[in-house]
Amino acid sequence: MRKLILLILILPCFSLKGQTDSISNNPAYQLLTGDIYKDPGVFHNGIYFRNAYLAGKVYFTSGDSIGGIYLRYNSKDDELLWLNRGFGQIKLEKPNVRAFVLQSGDTIFRFVRLNLAAHDSTEHFYQECLNGQVSLYAARGVTKYSSYYKMDMQFFKYRPQSRYILVINGEKYLLEKPTPKSLYERFPGKKAEIAGYIRENNLKISNEQAFISLIKQIETVLMK
Image 1 (cartoon, one colour):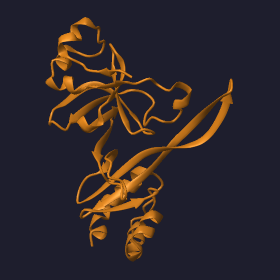
Image 2 (cartoon, rainbow, N blue to C red; image 1 turned 90 degrees about the vertical axis):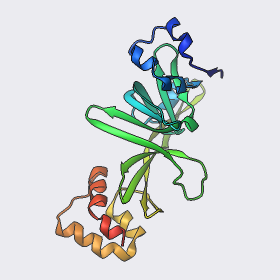
Image 3 (cartoon, rainbow, N blue to C red; image 1 turned 120 degrees about the horizontal axis):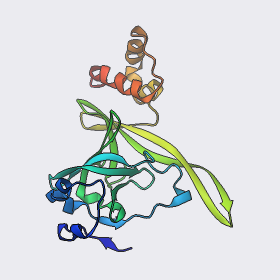
Image 4 (tube, rainbow, N blue to C red; image 1 turned 60 degrees about the horizontal axis):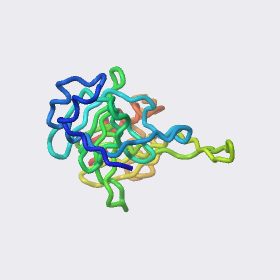
């Protein structure tokens, strides 16, 4: 697979529909480098955080940033893809990327490259769900749930599978699901106080957003 190096000098030779001159004139444009990515086709079912390319912005480790581009996150392989209208899909070089943002309507998803795994020295992209004295990150992975054969070839289907990492005073706590039960199992000494808060405020923790809101409200409890 050939390495694609994007140089501003060769850009006028191509028609980059949807990418303005102001974007290509940004010095950070030269950092949008990587291998040409070939979509795996029928193998790809469920491997993307969002199937469609979304408007986005990339923040580089150099301190530069560039917006007004289209991005997609491959949850299965933990890769950030950039849609270049002239060359196609580009798998950006992960060491160059510090963070990125995706926007779907009014909803903004922010991902940061961190090492949050307990027994893994590799850095991965995590969605930043909450950033404060208590931070919450989501590892947006996938799990294979079925396969089938067609013309003697095996194909796989995937569905999203997220895990959550709480960071409190530098300590990392893995939560398998965004539920109060996961908090009770991780913090048994604080179960009564957390459960009491949920009951007294008549909270219904039925989805991820409600769970994120709960974490924000009980920061002082978790920090004790």
